[in-house]
Image (tube, rainbow, N blue to C red; front, side, top):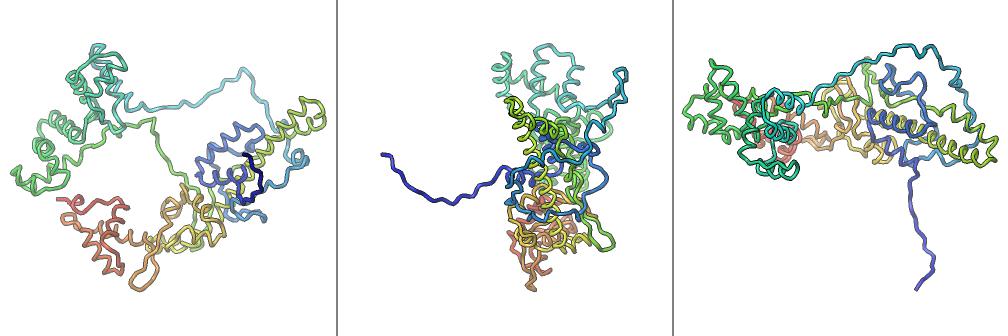
Length: 494
């Protein structure tokens, strides 16, 4: 039975413009370039200024004293599109028309040259190239290609041979055996770089040692091979006393053998420049300068692109508005208006992003002023998202989006912005200190330890307590793991 009634609800919905701003806030400058290019491709009403280039950043930077809109408070809740655009907003533009700036100094007979682009062969391509130098029948060549395709980025074959026989049968209708696969695999293991095609770390090290032993007759690699073959478990756990006793060798002989083993490459596949992975470069979003004790903040010019509404679309709006009584012209006018609205919203969101970034980073720079002046990590103050949110009067989620995946360039290096956020602890004097300060002291203690007798977590806890940091052993272990430092037993050296 249908029933009619009144119901009152309080809902909070975000407009498309607010959602756009939130998405733009959390992406770094390199991703912003791609996002702008995508928007330009999708929206013909949006274009870049003639003197602005998205592919490379200009020398000048977006300074921190850039004007901030008076009506903008930096939060996502700000909506600059509450008022609809008037017709004057579309046709009024003081920019010089494009046709007055275009030049036509070239002809169809001119020769255009393009810079050649080089591409390094991938890891698998290098192996396939070496496979071509071997005289193999079609069957073994097909098996070898299949094995090469199953190698991971480190050069290891992690797929069991038994499973690969089934794969070859189902995928290529090639019936083979484990023994035949192993014969082809041994051929691949002779390729460069040494160790490629191994099924585990032990086999990888053995392949390299045996090749060195074969190529260098004068050198003796029998002991390193013996250690990897018979005492690999003791080697990984650094039980050196057991190896000396069971192999009946001296400490000096073990040390010499370990030096040979440690010079091997545990990931042979990573030695080649794989074009599929490429190099990852860090582009700072913020730059902090120190001018005689005065800090100056700049926003990377990649975060401040020069965008504008296309003059061509402005002229279209003016023409179609005069004759929009015609059905076709009315549809064209509606299309052009929608594209211009979208372009205006995007430009406005980019400007709001600039304002929010510079306001937030200014607050962080002032909050951690001692560190940015000295570079001493022990001067870092405890800082959480809430601290900065209260300073700039923004929501915590906004600060989180700003700190996400952003880098800041300082006189002491380029760092991830969120690494400056840390929790607080109290020392024996009752002062609030940053956990990053404790991690720095912990790292210094481990770096200065005697390598033959590394400090245990218990000993590190005692040292920190003597320095005034009263923390538990499990907390020391947690900080050590966060610093990617192994336990004492694995740090031991002869």
